[in-house]
Length: 120
Image (cartoon, rainbow, N blue to C red; front, side, top):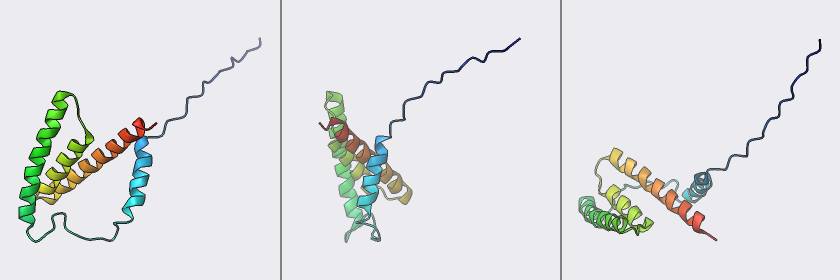
């Protein structure tokens, strides 16, 4: 008796689409070189506490604007980014500032991706 081997046909999976964030982060990495080597506090100026108080007020104002826009169905990256930026700059604890900066960077990357999707 002879055996016949069934020929398996394999379907080639489509190529993985690159993550859009990869390209954006490469641009960020290149742009970051302009700031490398600079050492400065997050809260600068002659009176950082007063600055934080200002940032807290602005954070509340932009968070209210962001919430109202979302409620009305007309959100925008501007209010989301500014609310996060001011909230981050109002923080006192370094770990909270760091976490806020990470969230701010994520918002910025998301906004760039949104622009790229809308581009003609």
